[in-house]
Length: 202
Image (cartoon, rainbow, N blue to C red; front, side):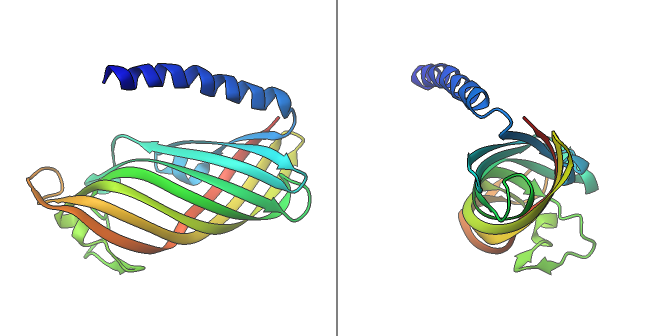
């Protein structure tokens, strides 16, 4: 534990210094953004996008929800999603294609869907009966378009699809209960990204 804390203390100053270097070295080529769709569901999120070449950028986004949400359900998660983007015109404007990876942890129960339904191979009715706690990792591709609002403001739309492998422990009820299964695997194919981003450019 002490060794882990030491590594965290060592890593944080290095990450801060690296971030400051990026901002100073790439003036007018950095975007800070928030996904308005996630904001609508009270999910804290932030992304940074950095120009790498005239038609290439790298975005790293993070999303964190540590509390219960709508429909008397539990939605706790933390995930990151780095993405390399190719822009058809100038970067930060117009059409782009993206290749992203994603990884995170979750603790979910309660589908919020009356009657419970299976969508894209996911049995949401199981979330009304059980709680799942685990992790996931995967990849995907996306398409998007950035609207230029002003010199320093953009509105960005993006949709993506791909694959995720999840592994979770299963608990006998939505809010409590004993573990009834360990390391339950699941292969997901479907939407992996949806964004309406408000972007501030530097």
